Image (cartoon, one colour):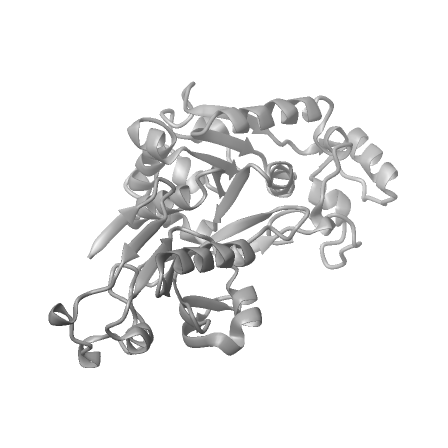
Length: 372
């Protein structure tokens, strides 16, 4: 076997083997699927037999599997999929018979098989051009990190205009000077590849809506991931480092940002219940591991920042800290008047209380929080 590795991370392999060294033993070949590191799948061996066989591989591509199934459905020879938590499909393996070329998708890998290396390479690159996943939302999207047994994966969540914050809204909703701070913070996220940001404030004060705004502003240069509060224990899962490493390789041209909502449990002064999670954040946001992963973590908290572990908020690791306070009555009335809303009389307000004064009857205005 002769291997040729290109400088772009794409692999070309000449798989032609003399008859004296090779037997087509289907009993020893996977009948349904193989992994990237194994030999060709059975349909490929059955087609090419002892003849010329060349493989060209693309590594770490984020495929649009739904589009592949739509356009290549009649040519799919083997497939392996399962239902996701959202009711969609997660494709593990697809083999496509293109006549002169076989294409084998194994997760983020694509192997193209043909009688010449040139034909395999051409088919693989054409397939990537057509089916590499593209962000279809003008408002950006984030990746929900999911856990399936021992496997860590993602599901894409597009953002919509319904939750959009206009640039002119920033000073109105968050106070005078907030738009200027946001401009500086965006520059920080673009220049600082690793570190920690903390958004502090009571529930409903607009922290998550601001995060949506960040995702939209940085959709072309950053990739955002979201770990739900119920899965914050993932931070201390040894498999998570491998997950971030794969994402870094898969999206080498983008900056990675991980969002932790209601993250005070993972950031509080270290104790028996959160020691590993705090240590994981410390390692990811500063030090040798941070140099490798280049991952920025943005946390929203409902507690006071003084309750957080001091090591997390020291200068150098903490790149941004912003408070999202409740809104005084005068400012709340100004927001309500500009947005055409009626609000009840009380001493202060959250943004959620201004836009939804009756929690049982939403008014169809911008909603607050990821769950909105």
